[in-house]
Length: 81
Image (cartoon, rainbow, N blue to C red):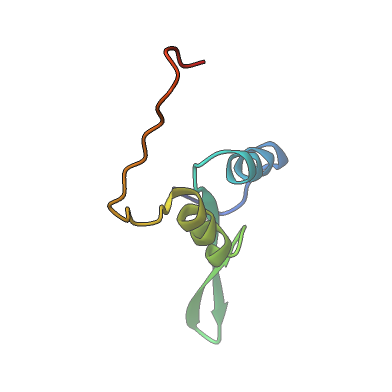
């Protein structure tokens, strides 16, 4: 999830950091600014968290090793605790 904003308040920044650090929700904020120089307009972009970090979190939290095709069974107990 990406939040697009000109600026964020401190509370929203804390929520974004919390969700990234403690949940499986990859969330980030991107800020856009417009600058003008000698009649030319420029658009700049800045990420709150480097995009590579949020992408790494998504991959590491959701990626699973491929199944090797093996099954495992346990025998000898009547009840499972």
